[in-house]
Amino acid sequence: MTLNIASTIQDRIGVAVSRLMSHERRNDRVLLSVPVSYPSGALATVDVTFNGDRCFVTDQAMGLSEAEMYGAGDFYDASAKRAADRFGIGYDGASIFALWAPIDRLEGAIVAVSNASAHAAATAVLKAAEEKERATNHELYERVASIFGKHIVAKTFDIVGRNNTWSAHNVVTLDRGRLAVFEFVTNHSNSLSNKFMMFSDIVKVERPVSLNSVVKKIDSLGPKGNMLADVSNIVELSSPDQTFIEYAEAA
Image (cartoon, rainbow, N blue to C red):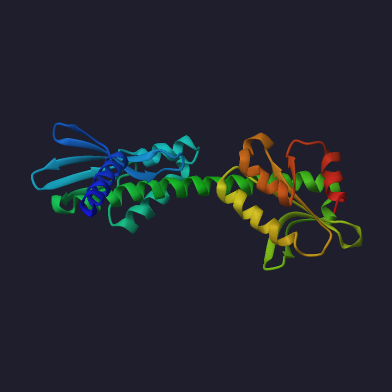
């Protein structure tokens, strides 16, 4: 009985591994799908070329393609250089690669290239999202200042929550010490989670603060937008001035 269970487990592991890592042979090259995810959810694919007892492993510029798909191509070069240095491999301006590694180190080369490629793409996408958020926060400040007046609107303002002090953006100081915060939020997971944590902490303090998540389009947030709706108002950047005023006055 024990042998049968052990055999079943071994077989199941073999099936799982074959599903996680598939390969396609093309003469002296092998294309290998690796269980490492890009921001889109696609799995990394590395190209392995053999020459005697050496192997050349490259991501075939898949990391760059992934970053470009998200409009983050301009941020990829710097993140790819850092990722390649971190994993001790190479980068030629497009592809991340391990140059003629000994064949007995093939596994390490595959792991290094696939992880560096995915990490570079994810970092580039994050940097692009942060840059977009900074630029749009400036646009949002001008919009809020035009509605309420620059003399009562701060680009950044420290607000004390229950556990932390947060640097909030586009903060309107209303009468009787009431505050209205208008934070721009992208649909990137980091932006969503950061604003959720900040608002969740601030809302626990007994102080009249109107918390508002400003987005390009509400529909673009997807299901994760429900988290923000639990701790803040959600308003589109293109909403009428009166909508901003009504949300602010709700503090």
